[in-house]
Amino acid sequence: MEKEYEFDFERLKVYRRALDFADKIFGVTKNFHQTVQYSLGDHLRKTAISICNNIAEGSGKQSKNAKIQFYGYAIDSARECIPMISISAKQAYLDNNDRNYLRKECEEICNMLGGLIRATK
Image (cartoon, rainbow, N blue to C red; front, side, top):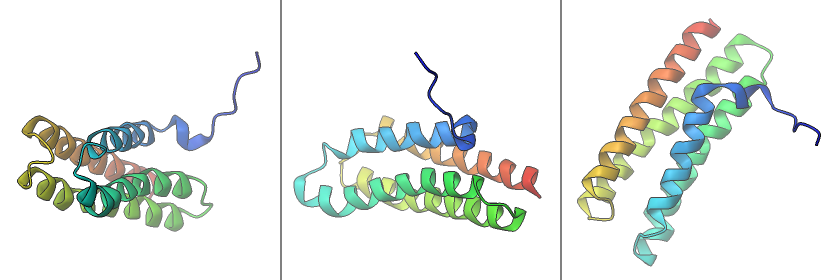
C-alpha cells in the first residue's frame, strides 16, 4: 500500500496537539444541552478548529512575517477558548476534570505556538 502524503504542518507537534484538543472539544460539547450546543458549543468547536487551521495555513506561508501572523491567530483562537471553557464549567456543562484538562491544553498549545513563533523569527 502506498504511503499517504503528509503535509509539513502534520509533522508539527503543536498541530497534532491542537488536533487532539479539537477532538476533545467535539467530544465534550456533544453532551451540551441542545440550545447551548448550537451557541456556546458551536462557537467552541469552531474556535478549536481555527487553531488547527491557522497552524496549517501559517506553515504554508513563504514569508516569516506571514507565518508569525497566522501562528499568532492560532494563539488568539486558543485564548478565545478559555472564556467559553470557563462559562461551560460554570453552567455545569463541563466537569472539573474536563475543564482543567482543556485549560491546560490551551496553555500548552499557546506555549508551543510561542516557541514556534520564536523559532520562525
